[in-house]
Image (cartoon, one colour):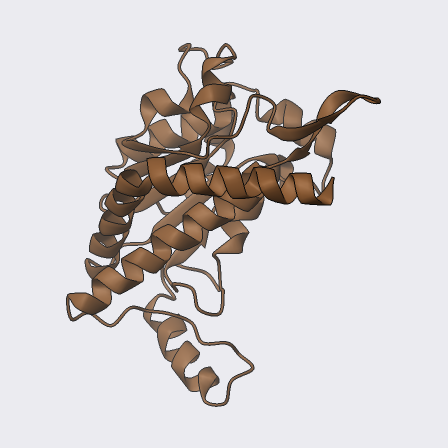
Length: 242
């Protein structure tokens, strides 16, 4: 099964690389424009999707103006079953989203592989109302196979500016076995992390080629990094709480 999982992940990565390249380029261009205009990149996801918002936050080799929207009841450590229940509630996003500092000119990534639950849809709608540019990371195949739980009947892919399809199958699991009654071995975190890091890498390259110094963290274990990183922390202190 180890080889089988690697093979499936390789297949998915190749599919995303080939089919989503143009969309990822577009997303990267928008990220670069936003940072050069002093904007911030926000990320939101419920449950396991929140892992991807932390993946690119305060990261050696990563961009500084990255703001993960971390609402703890929608994560897992306060109760996994409860978090799954809350993300299905229409209008629950009102409890936290207005405090996240999303403004016109920012970029907001909303991550939901199923794309059917109300909270990610409501976050995307709110961000667009504020004038932000909203990028969804979801699975079109998964979303299309399930009815929306949002009061509007819309999925995440219906309400964002652009969609990056992670091409996860319905249910997210990649493998099966004759003695296991359900599919297993999820894909969306591995693929999602690759998508995000690729988009941000392209954004960094774009900024550099346009003569703008990309605000990138150095590893805290490299000599001289403290001064470099502190300068960037101070620059974004008002908008990114570190």
